[in-house]
Image (cartoon, rainbow, N blue to C red; front, side, top):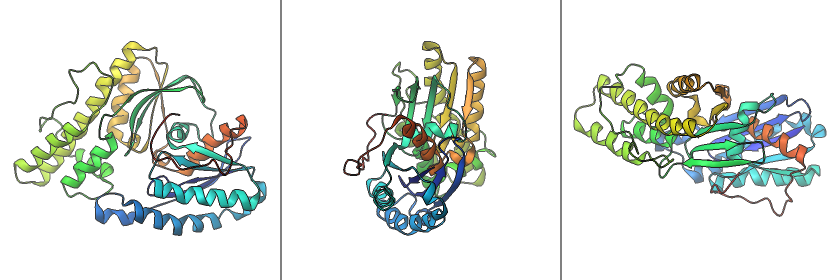
Length: 327
C-alpha cells in the first residue's frame, strides 16, 4: 500500500491506497473552516492548522504501517508554507518506516482523481479548473502531458470566490454563487465574455470580475438582484471557457475529454461541457464530487503509477515548489 498526504492549501488529507488493485483503503479529509471570516485562505493560519490536523488523521492509519511500500506527498504546486507541513511529515515517515518517497504534482493528482479505484484512460484532453489554476491539458499518457492553455490572471474558481466576497456571501464562494444562481436570470445582467475577439488560446477573468464589481455597485442589492448577478456571472464565465474549448475541439481530434479540479463540481459547468462533448462525439470523464476538491485519494492514485515506474525521490531532493512548472 501507499500512504499519501495532501496539504497544498487548506485541506488536510491522508489516504492509503492498495497498489495492485488501486483500491482506496482509507481516506480522510479535514477542511479548514477558520478561513471563512477572512474571505480567503490565510497561508500562515493554514500551515498551523495542518500541523494540528495531519497528525490526528495519521493516528487513524497506524494499522496499515506494516503494509506500506512507499510514502507519497504533494510537493508542488501550492502554498509553500502548507506544502511544507505535508512534506516534513512524509520525510519523517520515510525515515522512521524506512520507506521510499514519492513527490506528486498536485495538478497531475487532480487528473488522476478521474481514476480512483479505476484504470486510467488515455489519450485525454483535460480542462482543469480550480481556485489556483485554469488550464487545458493534452495528455497522451502519464508521462506525456502538455499544457495547451492557461489563465493570464485570475483562475475560474478564484473569480467565483472574489465575486462572492464582493457580494458578502462568505467563503468558499464558488458553491454559494452556484446555489444562488439557480434562482437567478442569467440574461438579466449584461457582462462581457473575456477574449471573445481574440484567437489566442488562453483565459482571463480579471476583466469579467471587474465588470461584475461595477454591476454590484450600480444599485441596491436585493435578493433577486444578487441571484441575477450570480447567474449572469456564472453563465458568462462558463461561456468564456466554452468559447476557447470549441477552438480546441475544432483543431484537435478529441476522443476523451475531462473536467477536473475543485470548480469541476459546478453542476452548471458540467451540464454545458456535457452538451459540448455530445455535439463533438467525445466521451466525457468526470471525477466523483467528493474527489473534485483537493484530497489525498487522488494523490495516492497518481502515486501508484509513479511507484510502478520506480519514480521515487531522495529525501534530500524532495523540495517544496509553490509554482507550476511542468507535469
